[in-house]
Image 1 (cartoon, rainbow, N blue to C red):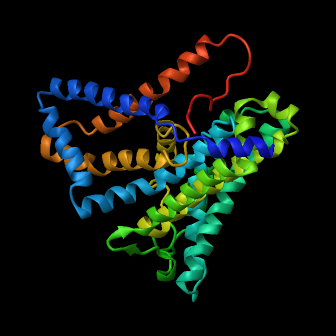
Image 2 (cartoon, one colour; image 1 turned 180 degrees about the vertical axis):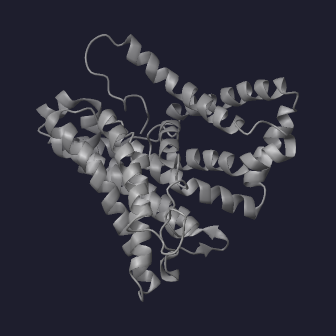
Image 3 (cartoon, rainbow, N blue to C red; image 1 turned 90 degrees about the horizontal axis):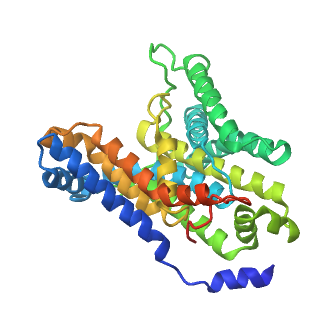
Length: 358
């Protein structure tokens, strides 16, 4: 076991697996340009507005990084599970549960210093995100229930439960809107030099998970289970524990994503505000090749597109759905190779993580 870990440490970084995401982005932009041209709009001008708005000023970069922060973490939630051979579709529900728990901790606890209040609220978010992921992990490990089915159902349960709690016991008094009270000032995550500090927290978590996956026995065991469960069983690796571990870590990270979004952007929980962030994490994870470091540029790209979409519509007149269409095209082209392998494979088990890079 230790020899295998030493070999993994000595492996050089391979740029090859990232060629497919790069090509996928380029092909998606070409298809998008054709569709924009069909609307009698200059595609070069549209793309210029898209990227200059997102990355051409300090304000634009700040907005992009704020949009990218929950995407980095929701992408990690999916990527870590992919590394373990699991497809975590439940990042949206885990993110919402973490956002609600962090909001409750943010307004319920008072008279706490920021150095205690902020981490405490994020811990609440991580715990509740991990709790809902644990349910899917336990059903997968001990009953063989497919995680895609359980996480989709748990998404519906969490969304409905969050709306119920926000409209009843957690509702802001005297307000007709379905939302929680605003969090205390001590729970708000500040900006650093005009940039969202939550993004740097997300990057730190991504680097930590990358190091764990690359340099520890736990990371090696998780990779082995994801690639070949039979080989992991013969090696004496506790497969059920690794399944539970990957789902718990994924759920905790998604919960932190919801917590940071609540403590830095919304400053309260509103059910509709976090819609889609967890599902965008699937695109981020696949675009980043399920690599904890790869999700960072993927999230920045998608965050920039989300941030500049309204400006692009206003300045060029392009349909607002073009951003969603570009993301759908990127997702299609980046997953095409692995889908082709799945259809060609006739015998044996196909790991979702095979071929996704290191």
